[in-house]
Length: 353
Image (cartoon, rainbow, N blue to C red):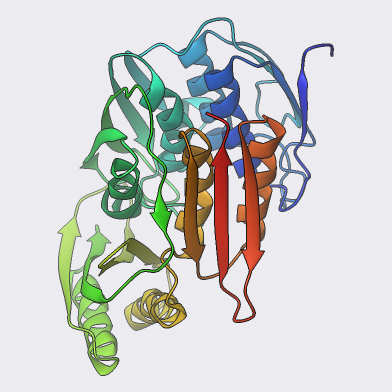
């Protein structure tokens, strides 16, 4: 194991983010890694289809040698052999498992984007699988919140939805175009500032129009009661299987925040609207610049900047703390996480450059 950075996949929240961040940073730095106890804290430990696709995707970028890259594996060796190469890449999560998969392609995208953001030249990445999957960022979140925030750090990327993919079939497709940047800029977002607008999309795939209309109407009514005007579009779309969800974006003076809720059989459209709206209102009352999920997803890009990034977050999640631990293991940044008495927190990421 000489030369390998050993990462304990059971550390902290012990989920897939440890794998994805480690893969991104290994590809960027060229440092070989061995991840043990992969996803040890999950009901089904080891690599699932989405995680295996992330492994294969990262390996394509840097011609990595791998050992343990198979479904269910709880140990992975990943050895980059070349610097990250910009280019055209295609990955289908369904190919990772017999019978297909609706694995979340947005998580695969988040593995690929940091290395390609620093690679010389332009890249086009086509990903197939689940685009709107529970317990993962939706296409709408990545398109409306994550990428615009990264653009403030110098990341030049455009994402488009070819077709949506829902659990359990998937078969959605997104297209990412990205131009490599010479350097990334630190981000300072301590307070969100005044709320300027709330926008959103209520989606119903292969379902009656009244479902997305009810989600949109109830969400608009709830937010209006809280003194917020919202523009929420009700959209009926086609997909490989039925699915529904509501995705809201809060446009503050200084930042963006995204909130979503997925529908499922037996779950009323009004309940979906309430989940998304209550999450938005909780963040609004916190006054923090970032909601908990965006803060977690900015830790790694901030570590690749030159200088110090500072951002306030509504809640310091175990996910965020674990991701900070992974970044620090690579020696790229020092991360200070300071909780406040009201439950919010302030994150400082001092990158080594």
